[in-house]
Length: 86
Image (cartoon, rainbow, N blue to C red):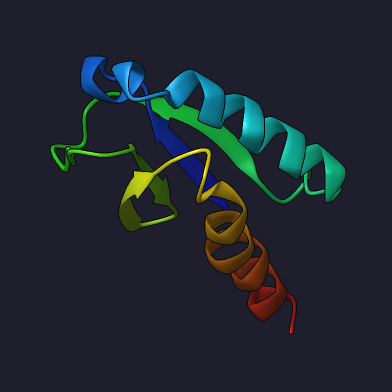
């Protein structure tokens, strides 16, 4: 799985650096280092008023914030990995 966090100027101002840290921590805590590649990307053209744009494989999500990170990670990353394992 490839998770790309937008680090373009708009998302940077909305906290992409903090989301990178949260993703790094969650990936390590869940021992997903061999299954998830974390990368930065420049603007995907999906800017939203709130939050950062995150791409999981080919799916683009907008509005990811530190406040909704846990539910996003569980739903879009952990659930997808579990589905792929089964």
